[in-house]
Picture 1: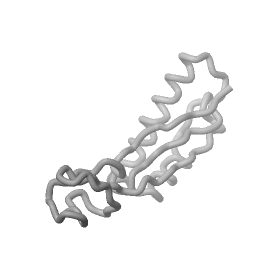
Picture 2: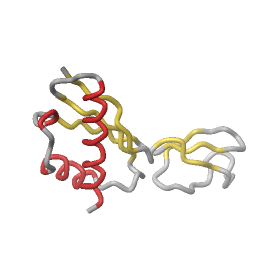
Picture 3: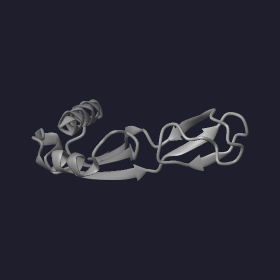
Picture 4: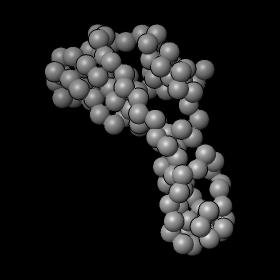
Amino acid sequence: MHELSIVMNILDTVEEKAKEMNATMVHEIEMEVGILSGVEFDALDFAFENSPKPPLLSKVQFLMHKIKPVAKCSDCQLEFDTLEYATPCPGCKSIHTELIKGNELRIKSFKMD
């Protein structure tokens, strides 16, 4: 389960930044996770709930926003919803499209004292 290593990396990153800012407690970590990021959402939640946490993050809550995939056509500039990495443009039928949202995995914010 690679979700546990992802969670441990998130916790390490937040702890490091919180220490730099002289925080006494981190209360919330807000994440943006794309539907096409390759992450299993339930496994990520499970890993977060069951991972060991340092004292600075002992009471932290985890908020995850699922980001819907959106692609853009390089030829006609149409942006459209998709569920795949390579989807022909529904407007002009071009195959020159790229995913512009939906594969991210990032810390959006965290709240601390």
